[in-house]
Amino acid sequence: MTQGTSQVGSSRDRIQIPSPREFGHWIGGQWTTSQGEPFIRENPGNGELVGRYRNATPEEVDSAVRSARHAFDQGVWSDLSGEDRSRVLERTAQVILARTEELAAFEMAESGKPLRQARAEIERSAALWSYAATQARSINGSSFAALGKGLTALTIKEPVGPVAIITPWNFPFLIISQKLPFALAAGCTCVVKPSELTPATTLLLGEILKAAGMPDGVVNIVAGHGDPTGDALISHPDIEIISFTGSTRVGKHAMRTGADRIAKVALELGGKNPHIVFADANLEHALDAVLHGAFANAGQSCNCGSRLLLERSIADAFTEKLIAAARKIPVGSPLDENTLVGPIINEAQFNRIISLIAAGKEEGAILALGGTDRRINGGRYIDPTIFVDVTRSMRIAREEIFGPVLSILTFESAEEAIALANHTAYGLSAGVWTRDISVAIQAARGIKAGTIWINTYLDGPAELPFGGYKESGIGREVGLAGVEDFMEIKTIQIRDAGYSPRWIGPRISPDSNDRSAG
Ligand code: NAD
Image (cartoon, rainbow, N blue to C red; front, side):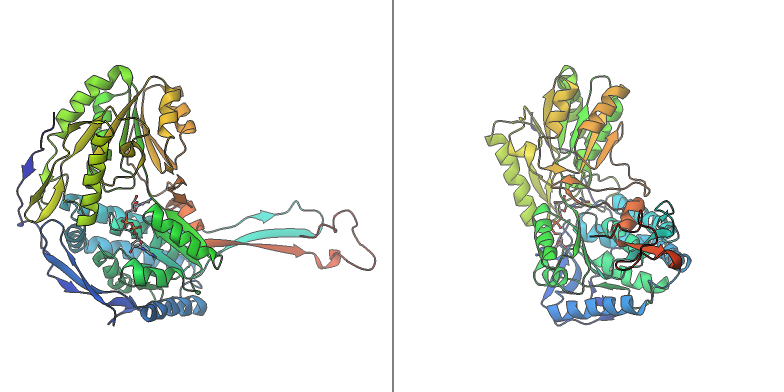
């Protein structure tokens, strides 16, 4: 049953391909030159040069962190009112929108994602900056007036301090926009290290923030690989919180590094997300969402719905229609407006996907579509791939593949579907398709994951927190929770002067004054 998918040619008339650009680091509100080892980024779609970079050395990382520390200690940002911070964040959203085409072109050229998807990502990112702008004005604590006569207390929220933000390559501008504006709304200052595979748009944020009125030193951005740049950043003693998105393997390393100095750590990690379709669902909508969830961004998505769990009574018919539709997905140049599946990011990831496809076959799953790879114009592509007869113990049912590979399993009951969904070390997201509200609630309550989509997949309004259970992470991004991750809670207890407790000497209020904290 293995067959290729349709392929479309490329056209360049609708987009300005960015000329290769040389980037330094953005430190203290300006571009700085680097002494670090040079590296380049080439377009995964055609091998053309996109950018020249240098790995920030530990000394350059130190300079970036000192800049963030100084800006924090001087209060150039954290002392501003929420109203003033909000204004800068909203202006940033507007400058991002004004530079959408340029940002989308760099995003497409470095990540290989289809151009229309890159444009949508930039627009969605601007919306996150706008939302975070509203949060900058809404930070508040609690008050306590029922603690006994003479004692009043309140909690206030304060910015944690300089933040290290580390991001992956698959949605570079979206992911930095899920973190940075929220850290800034909280009043933190930041040092950002984007992935070495897609640094351009994040580095351009330096210029964008400056144009929006961000004080110098509040946001510093360094290019580089995990070694030496990322490691120097997360182990820096002046970093108070590490906000990391990437693989579970590197996330564990970031957590261990933070533990050495009890730095706060927030992690957004991998996923092996189940997409469950019950027989009573709107199957037409479910089918489209399953394809989108599995194959968007060539499956290189933390939310990739890479496990399809089908109720047995509809499994054969649904699978047949799914394969027929998947076969028509346009695979090809990211520049083509029709393309839905672009190239794989690099050789290492390509080889990993191919080896997991081989493992699926070796372990006895049936390859029903794809499994094929091809080179187009220098890019490495893998066709949408579907395995049937997959069992829960197979590697393709357990491991994050991060490619366009969908594994289909079947179930008889809601209980079995939930058990299958939870049979993984991850817990990022899940999709459930049913018209039965009690089944929907049962699944939503039973699945251990940070986001459950019912009769939808991949929705993501800025108001809603996002994050993982289990090995998918710690902490939440976006929404109110996204700001709170970057804040400390301070408790302030106030006694009326006349009711001060006495440790020695006569007690004024023996019933309520003896509750010292431990
Ligand atoms: P990765 O872990 O290889 O790299 C992520 C970032 O960490 C990069 O900037 C990299 O340079 C840096 N890094 C690597 N080694 C480091 C070190 N020793 N010290 C400090 N930094 C280091 O991940 P990737 O391949 O870029 O991204 C894919 C992974 O990200 C997938 O597992 C995916 O599921 C996950 N992801 C998760 C989310 C989420 O929100 N949960 C979103 C997107 C991607």
